[in-house]
View 1: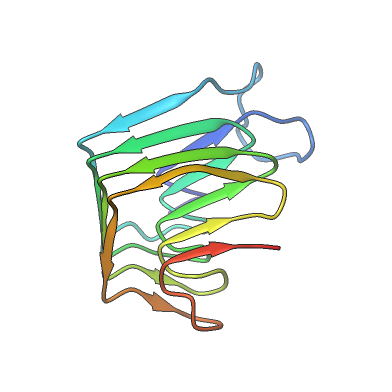
View 2: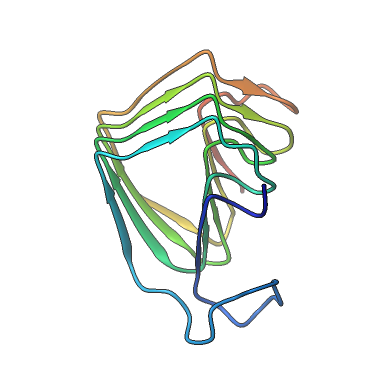
Length: 128
């Protein structure tokens, strides 16, 4: 439980509980598994930092934004990763990228059996 299994926070825009004093660095996740997490935002929540995900699995996660959420001018590079049976209650089911954030790379990713609570986006939801 909580905001996310991993929260990358690099902004002073919003007060969050237990936020890092000096912000976040770029985080890389290579060959990682995010499995059966039940959190508020997403198992991997990026608030204003940069996250690189390579060759990773997101399976059976439940959150407002699905498996990955990118907010507050955050950046995401996603390559060769798999999204299966994730559920988002508000913003898609696999990946949510807020309007002021950037999906820098989206290569060779796969998804199946993901469920969106609102709307019909079961893949990557790019807010406009």
